[in-house]
Picture 1 (spheres, rainbow, N blue to C red):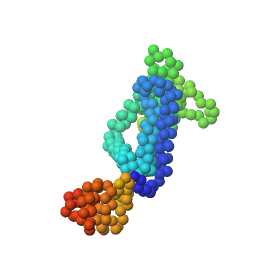
Picture 2: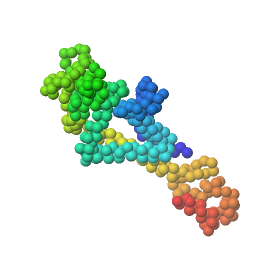
Picture 3: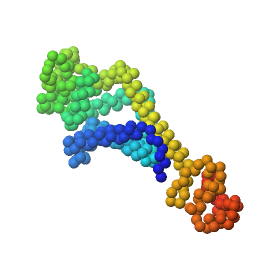
Picture 4: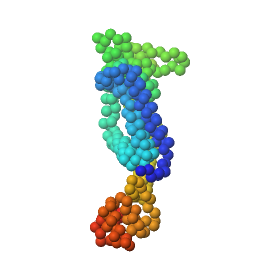
Length: 318
C-alpha cells in the first residue's frame, strides 16, 4: 500500500548511493588492474595496508546506506528506513567510541600508529598503491619513517646489512628528500647512501623527523578545521537518522487512518471515528458471511453483545 508521505531531500540519498557506487567501482577497477580479482589470495599476501580497501569499504557502506535510504523513502518501506537509521547510528557510535578511546589512550594509539607505519615501510615495494600513499604522506608532512629515517632499515631494499645487494642500501625513498624549489626534474636518487652520513649531515638533504610526530603536530595546528569537519560529519549522520525516523513515524501515522476493506483500503475520516457502528459496516465485506448474517438480524445495527461484533470492535479500538 502506498500512503503518499512527502519525502524530504531524496536527492541527498540518491547522491549518497551514486557516490558509494563510484567509490566501489574505483576500488574494484584498481584491484582488477593489479590482478587481485583473479588472485584473491593476493589480498592477504601484502604485509601492509592496501589503500584500495578504503575505496571498497567506504564505497560499499555508502552504497548500502544510499540504497536502503533511497528505496525506503521512495517506496515508504519502513523496514529499509529502520535499517538505514540503525546502520547509520551504529557507524556514528563507532566513530564516537573511537574518538573517545583515541583521546583516553593517546600513548597506546601512538605506539599502534608507529607499528602500523613500520609494517607498511616493510611492504613499501610490494604494492604500488601503498608506495604512492607512503610517498604522499612523507612529502606532505615533511617526514621520513615512523620515528625517523632509520626506520627504513626495516625494508629489505633499504637496510644496511652487508648482504644487501640493492643499490638503495642504506638509503631512503626520494619522498624523504628536501626538495630544491629550483629543480625542475625530480631526483629519485637523492636518498641513496644518505644514512651512511652523520645525522647532522643528513638534515640538509632529507627530512629527519618521524611521520608520527609530524602528524600529531599537524593535528594540533589544524585542530579547529579537523574538529569542524568531524562535527559536520556527525551532524549529517544525526540529521539522516532523525529524518529516517521522522519518515517512519509519518508513514505509520498515515497508515493508522487506513483500514482494510475487502481487497483494498478505505480512508477513515472524523465521521468514522465518531460512529463506531459506521466503522463496523465498512468491515462487512471482509468479516465473512456468517458475521454479516448475525449483524443484519438485529435490524437497527450490530448487536453489542454478539461475540463476533465484540471481537471486531475490539480490533478496531486496538
